[in-house]
Length: 292
Image (cartoon, rainbow, N blue to C red; front, side, top):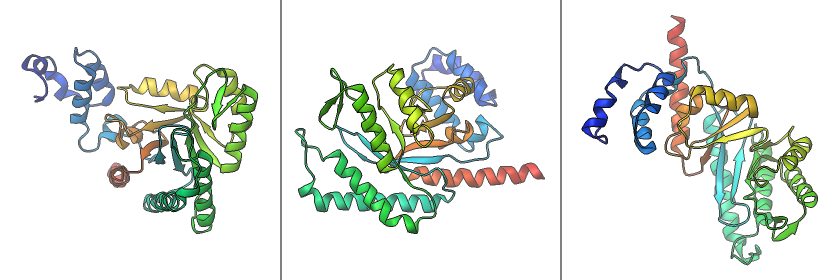
């Protein structure tokens, strides 16, 4: 019985207790005449214990993080750090926290000379310079590769609006390529307006080998009740999948269960690392138990 459902709704879902795998749960819940919010709450009830194992008993790897360190409303809206070759969760958490704290301190200390735009926001390039400076200073003490991620927060008005300038497509593309090259950006999202396929293709030709481009060679999955089949279709189309665990429904269990290699998290979600550590222990125990 679910306390958030009416007596009639509870009577309609009495067979859920017999469900033994995620795909059956997905089919059963999709048949229910319930709001999406109630469906999410039902799934949450199933997410106790080893829910990653409930999705896929063969899962044996953890996702790496794309951590949002700084957010703002105008211009570039999210500044992120990520690593594609880190294995130690504790070290990654420590390094990301160190970078974030140093960036915030630097922005506070030098705020008086960071040029603000008309909307009273700190200059995007100056913020990127601070991130790059801190990463470059500390890279000799880090035994894995750190890259930046960026939400461009695209704006278009008779041309692409970039750093308070209106650019034609050619100049805008060159600006993005130069940005990725200089600041060692490994992930970029919201870079073009919807359905500007030619620009996505041109950008991919230039930087696709070293940078994940959302909606081109990677796809950011946001809150949605989703099946294994849908995940596999996305994987065929985009190759690289990223799960946004800042939403209510999705958490690290889904990333592990669906074998999604990267997750996007906010810097204040320290419990994400705790969850990954817990799942790592559960995977080890599961592997050992199957050897017996």
